[in-house]
Amino acid sequence: MDLSRRVNTDPRRALPSVHRLAESLIRENTDLPRWAASEAAQRVITAAREQFDAQGADGEGEIEVPEGEEIWLDRARVLARALASAHPRRVINATGIVLHTNLGRAPLAPGAAEAAAQAAAGYTDLELDVASGRRGNRLAWVSQRLGQLTGAEAAYACNNNAAALLLALNTLARGREVVVSRGELVEIGGSFRVPEILERAGVKLVEVGSTNRTHLRDYAEAIGPDTGMLLKVHRSNFELRGFVKQVELGELVHLGASRGIPVVEDLGSGTLLDLSPHGFPPESSVPARLREGPDLVCFSGDKLLGGPQAGIVLGREEWIAAMRKNPLARALRLDKMSLAALDWTLMTLLSGRGEQELPVLRQILLPPREHEARTRAFAKRLLEEAVAAGAEVDLEVIHDRVPVGGGSLPGFELDSWAIALKSRESAQVIAGRLRDADTPVLARVRDGVVLIDLRAVDEEEVTGLFEALGTALH
Ligand SMILES: *Cc1c(COP(=O)(O)O)cnc(C)c1O
Image 1 (cartoon, rainbow, N blue to C red):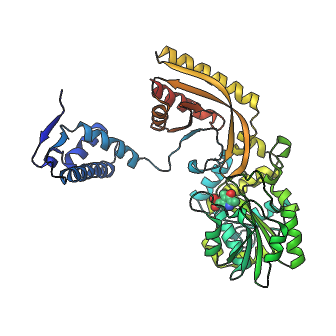
Image 2: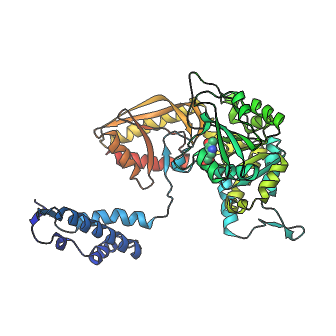
Image 3: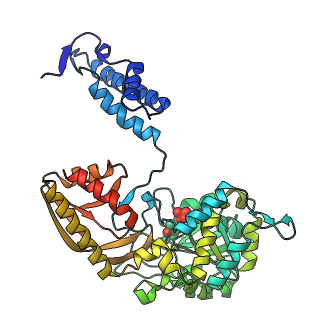
């Protein structure tokens, strides 16, 4: 059946009207809100008109116009469904990468999410001292808990780590020079570049050393009457190997102390626990960094810490007090929902239950044997169901290595297990279908194979994952 016809008159007349298309959408799905149906129909028809106009503009005059409403209805249905669902949508992270910036980094523990929801849904004593009825400090509780957990003299929390660094720079060194190694002028995710943040913070960047090597004397020689800070930035998302030299935080602290200049570290990602017994690099531990003696350390709340989006600053009381008074602090402050989730997360760490209760810690510390057994059981069930449904799949449980992700621990990989899937369709097609599922599933594709890693998949998400795989493979 030929669904196209050739026209040499105005091809746009073959298109259904926006109104008719919207009505058809609502007729087939009465739950669809009218605004979503109208918007989707409008966009689909406008895009089609523009496409015909562009094709017609070459003067050929012969354009293929699909007949009937079906093709437009198909396009509009997908769009209307997307418009009518809440965003961001829940997705299943089957990549094995625990901290995935595109997937929202750390998932909160249920208790932390509940604390955020409670704070959101009612009034709270956010900035009130209930006992006296006077105005209180919104950060009083989390600051205390951070102090208890890390031994820091003072603590501060704001919107995210980029904000924390901005505030630290602007407070300690506005209008002055900040010395940074050329090997640490990093970009973290497209929109965060250290040199640009420094510029916007109103400080002057003084680069020292070379890309691969920076010595203590490079810093020492750069110090002048205008120097306001020595800044160390964790590379977070890449490694330097080979002929490499960088100055350790402790050495920089000595230099700063001898010249009366504050030393600040942007650690990026840090945990409040010591994960080195589990083989994690020692610099991931915030308390260990603080023991090196910097004036301030800042890091994200939603990376290895396993809490909500936040920027946490720990260090000397005099600097933290100055940061609190900076007018920018108001623009960068932490909202009540994140604050509630952060407080819950810190209390859980104080109780020694972090490794059991915080999803990020649970997932990165997952014993490989347990992961393997779970993966094998899942693969067995998947294969049985696929065979019963008559699907042709080829699957294998493989040993794998995955990064922690999210700008944490570059070069460090976790021992992992994954299900490698092949079917008649290409890996890209299967991965695309998994993303199209009711609850989209994100998987890795490598060497033409789809890899499903269950590390970051919750027990309650397993059913959704099975459904998505069942549909994608048939
Ligand atoms: C991730 C990261 C940041 C940005 O943190 P956000 O919490 O996303 O604002 C800044 N610096 C370093 C070194 C990082 O790793």
